[in-house]
Length: 230
Image 1 (cartoon, one colour):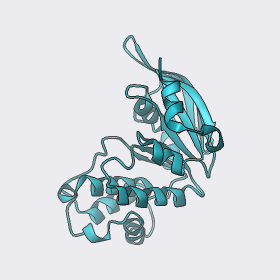
Image 2: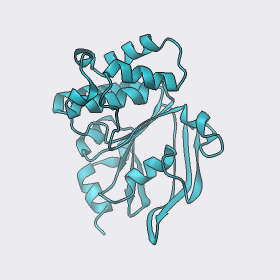
Image 3: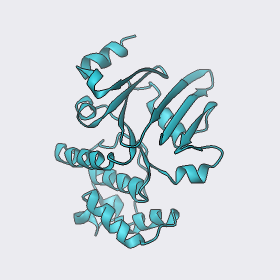
């Protein structure tokens, strides 16, 4: 398994945000992570990527414990957080070269050129990140997540702010990347999830309430309402 999540929990004071969440993802799986606002999606993703410490449980990336060998585990994953923090004063290529340098990559310029092509940023490379539309900034965030060719991608609302054509292009990229990577992404767009996911996890009130393959889903909108009604 490329990702193993074992009984992880997180409390904020007296409020339990995530409770004993467990699941695993294999290479080639594209897993949608669904739930209503406040269900614990973003907190779970932040724990999986090491941005928020666990209160209990364990996370393993390709068999490596995230908290025992954080640098090695994190080098195997790419993360696009919900707020997509970027250095606005940098040009796209400059920023991506900086990120690639953090991973001590070889052939940095060639890899940056390729990831710019993959994410459709070619026409925007003369601009600073702060000059980009929200949709193109989202593409830059995705580009930094895949620049080092990770085995696992964790994406929080990866198509937020994109127009329908851009969303279709990014989903096509995710389908291509998902052939040999594990991908976990959250989304509020049920049609998008139904189109590209091989599996869907539902979280409600901090707990996993369903783990279904695409063939088990049926009417996703009705299922979502049924699982989150209480």
